[in-house]
Length: 482
Image (cartoon, rainbow, N blue to C red; front, side):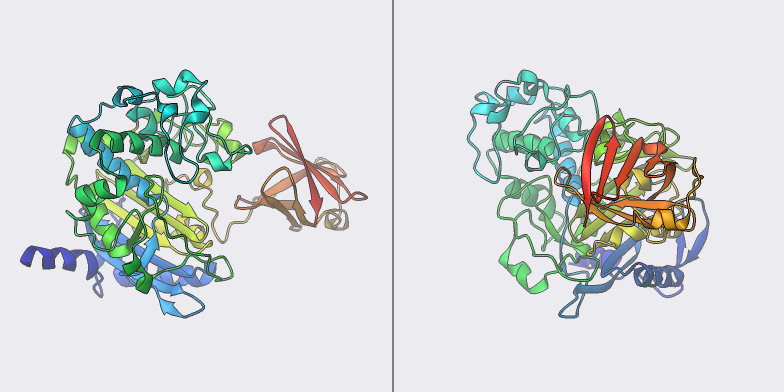
């Protein structure tokens, strides 16, 4: 009982008035000022609810929740509120997978099909869009290993239901390129279930949730959670419908509380439950990342923007290097949810942020810089658009008046892409902002034609037909003004 109470104190009662917090650059500031900063950011960016914990010496020394779990009912967000973990669930899965590897239940480089009793496409798997019959004619699946799954290099899409035909496919040779994929992790989960004869919820309870006393965490929805629900909200503060998962998915079915997740994160960064050498391997770069963005069309286009920090991926976590040592991170995102965690192991400094609002990610850049001095997280690659971001101006190749620019202002939608593009302007440029993307200034190259050279984008407007043609990466899409 004494040990349990001590853990509870460290993880929950960690905000003391006047307490000093240390950043990775050695500077220090008061916990009071961080509290004020978070409250100001929430107000400025119109964020519904936020939970923040800062770690010094690998211990949570500041942990606090802010705002509301349910805006219409004015229910406060608490450390015991049940949150959708989104892809924070993948960190838990990677931790469990590393235990399997440490115990030699799975070899990192042994093809996963060698653990199965029959060909992978022959398995009938119940659940939402499961099974591997789509791969029957593509034998490249036979090359996929645990290493390939954990580094997101399977060649699978993120989820098959994002594909136009809703089918699972291999888009590039496994092991050759990073492309974030929940499908890849689910394949490894399936193999781990076959090896143990246990479902993933049971595996999670036995290896993580029960040992760490995470009593309000599960890979499937529990009825006891109904009394402590935190909802995700849109930018207007309207709650989204809650997804109550009935099947466990390593890719993101986990529900948890802030206090529970901090128990797990504390164990992870202190390499409890896995050897220090295994923790080091998990959180070190296994593959380099060159893509200009993590998601969207630019995920297929390489660039050099993140070469300075040597952006890469370990086993289940992203990695990069800084003058203050290496770092590993993991994000979580869904409608109404935005989470981020990052640890600097050499400094033993970390932060965990969980938000329940579509605006939540807009405060990440400023909050990371203030709380732990992290100026290195690749926010553009992550698409963490700051709430106060202003696109830099750009000179036109031809002269246009503000009246000329005003003709093109509006919101454009397309049947070919699941995004809207909002066109506004400042004193000099048209500004384009696609759904969930960083806004950017457009350069006029003709009276009705504009480009954004950095991303290879050309927009051609037709005022009579009220259309806008988007040209990028050799593809052409038609948008119509609403």
